[in-house]
Image (cartoon, rainbow, N blue to C red; front, side, top):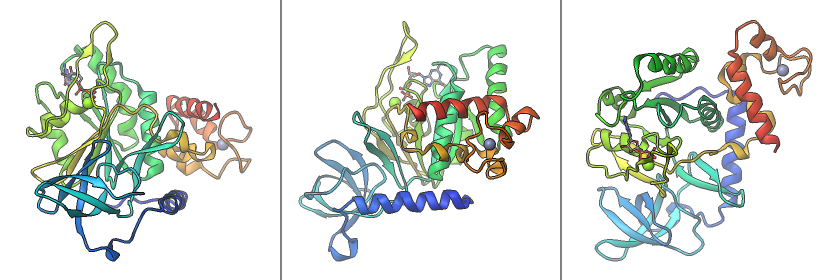
Amino acid sequence: MSKRKLNKRQQARIQKQQASHHTSSTSETSSESLSGLSGTIIANHGKTVIVENTERKTFTCHLRQNLETLVCGDKVTWSQESDNTGIVLALHPRTNFLARPDKRGKAKVIAANIDQTLIVSAAKPVLNTRLIDRYLLSAEIAAITPIIVFNKIDLPDEQSMRNFKEQLAIYQSLDYHVVFTCAKHAIDISHLKPVLVNKVSVFVGQSGVGKSSLINAIHPEAVAAVGDISSSTNKGRHTTTLAQLYHLPEGGDLIDSPGIREFGLWKIEIEQAASGFKEFQPFLGTCRFRDCLHEDEPGCNIRAAVENGEINPLRWDSYRRILESLRE
Ligand SMILES: Nc1nc2c(ncn2[C@@H]2O[C@H](COP(=O)(O)OP(=O)(O)O)[C@@H](O)[C@H]2O)c(=O)[nH]1
Ligand SMILES: [Mg+2]
Ligand SMILES: [Zn+2]
């Protein structure tokens, strides 16, 4: 996998994030100090987790006391207790992780050791580019490669499809990879597959856009639960409550996740938000005031770039809305 170039800000942030994460996990033990097997977590069922060994055999495992919550993609040291059970002894350090806030606003990790996030949207429920901007921001901040997927291309007529394409063209112009798919008829899945091979990919996006359907279409042996959109509200039901990891026969893993609306964003400092907008980067640090938040400040070069057409006003608008929600 080609390493993404990180700027200094991103590097510093990630180091800080990982340092604080590691010091907070007191239960982490060096794997070398334990004699045990290595494995990967492929599902978490609450009291037990599913551990997969290096031969891809699965074991239902309890956790040694004081271990933190384990998530899909976690690498662990474990020991076998019976033919299909075992106990997890230690968690290996995570290279990165995706998290969302729980009811009390604390970080709830949903997947770890990820290469890329597939930000899935669809013709139905409505295309929400502001939500895409939020997912992009959190992917940028976590330095995880984002890929934008627009699903259910079988539904819109030609005119609406042109509209959708116009709305998504902005991301292509920013060099984000945009893929159009139809999970229902498995058309155009061939566009998506090469992107996934040999990578660990987490599917994110509103409930009902077709994340589980895409996983099933890409990987015929996967049995991700698919839910119907209730026709009266056009809102997806929450069918996936737990994240689950699937292996691609060609190599690479797919992680299905429950609809996570606000993942990542609650932990972002207001000053960090601008650096998650790719096209803002060349202007950062060039404004008249060092602490410019690029709203209405005089001498703001980002606003100047919006005015002279170098930055799309819709993205700037998204940015300002994100600042507002971070202030709440
Ligand atoms: N017409 C159409 N429906 C789809 C497509 N992909 C998924 N769906 C339907 O959308 C609904 C929600 O799909 P699901 O995979 O559960 O979405 P998730 O909540 O994002 O995992 C289900 O009724 C699927 O059959 C598609 O490409 N076209
Ligand atoms: Mg689902
Ligand atoms: Zn500015």
